[in-house]
Image (cartoon, rainbow over all chains, first blue to last red; front, side, top):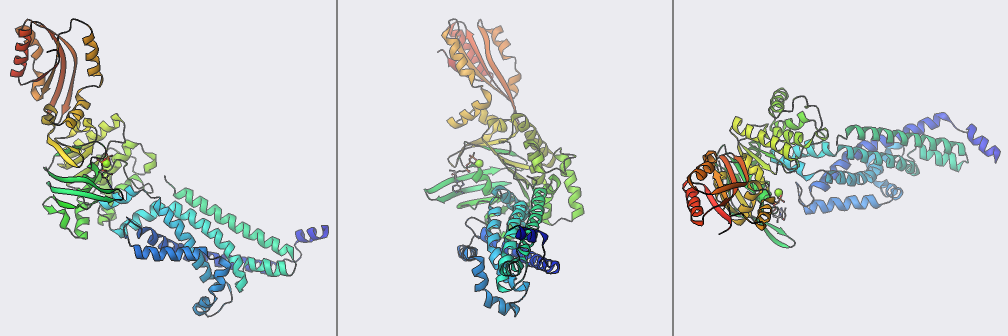
Length: 227
Length: 341
Ligand SMILES: Nc1ncnc2c1ncn2[C@@H]1O[C@H](COP(=O)(O)OP(=O)(O)OP(=O)(O)O)[C@@H](O)[C@H]1O
Ligand SMILES: [Mg+2]
């Protein structure tokens, strides 16, 4: 037992080069997926909000379709979503290997999750402010770009922080389809080959990434919030 | 300037139809401060929102500056709105923007070049007395200052009409007065037509030329402020007029006085305009052998002149008192016997 703990803490099996590469893969997958999630999430969230009753682009049909899409993809467990999307990913990228292969599943899984947060953030905006913009003759486009998005920015940023952290944990699962990254390393090299020190280090690195994301998110939210 | 004809708005709700504005006809002249007063739910907000089509009419027409607002295309409506400013009870500022950027918002909407925007914003900040606060955020301002930003923003595009929806209802009396002074100031400087809705008669008395009283979606009484003050016809109007002319305790206090002996008749005199300056009391005591004591008096300034009310008790021979009352009437002063026969 003592030997086990000592061995773990001395990290005899950790190959730092592999560890670094896995870290890079995790960061790559998370960041690219995050960028697209932000974009699609805001788009979907805006559609959800604007097509709702009494809003600028009130449209029952589009609202129902978007809401259905968001609800369905938000409910499918991520690990199943990855598997379901294998054929789609293969046609899209031509391969199932490497971190890029995880991106479609990551984005399709996370964007609806974020879209709901965007919708909630937009709902929080005082209706009077939108009305004021209308009374000044603003177009719908101007209302979206100059009122809705800036006024909800702190909530959009804190939402994307939560999503980013969820994405990091999704990337760990993406190892299943051979996407690499820290989760993959911890599972294959750490757990399956019985090297607990690798699992430990991989976990610590994931934690560090999460803390950094949370810190940046909190900092930006506070800085943006002028209420 | 503004003409409403048979303007109506009915909302469909789960509990049935609600007629918020019921076939209103109204004409508002250029350069006028037009007040609309009514209790909560009378339909005031709906009426003012119909003016810039934030609410689409169920029937009837709105004409502003010879433009029929109902028939404008979306684009024309946006342009028409740029020529009207609106201020709100809860200010409705963008909290994510500084004071200067809030004021610049309508200029951005219109597409004014940045450099010009800055110049215009500086002028407006000066106009509303917020020098040095351009870089603050709304959350750092008091209610009165926020409303000043609201006013500057509403005036940015040189509107012809300013719509005020309970612009002072969220402010304390002193701040209310300073905002009202500012509205009068811009009304005169810019020859701006102001439509203002409120539930406080004080606001009407202080700055409006014309007043309309609204109840259940209908305009029940309308006219120059002083006329309405002098001879309110509807009960509702009388209640509103009492808000400013007669402190609440008056009736109560007079009732108490009557419990004692030695008080004769009580008269309420109402002076309007120049009458308020006449030495009426002196004349009465000189001419008639009666004694008069003044119980309570109040004078208020309206935009069309002063308006005063005076409660006096009068003692003397019955016939003499009748003569006095006739004399007062001759002087074009309204008089009402509030107690004693
Ligand atoms: N969007 C709406 N849908 C349904 N009913 C409405 C709507 N807006 C207003 N009403 C109804 O119309 C009537 C008049 O409302 P309005 O807001 O114009 O009153 P108001 O005179 O401005 O009152 P307050 O002084 O409280 O602001 C009310 O009975 C209200 O319930
Ligand atoms: Mg109202």
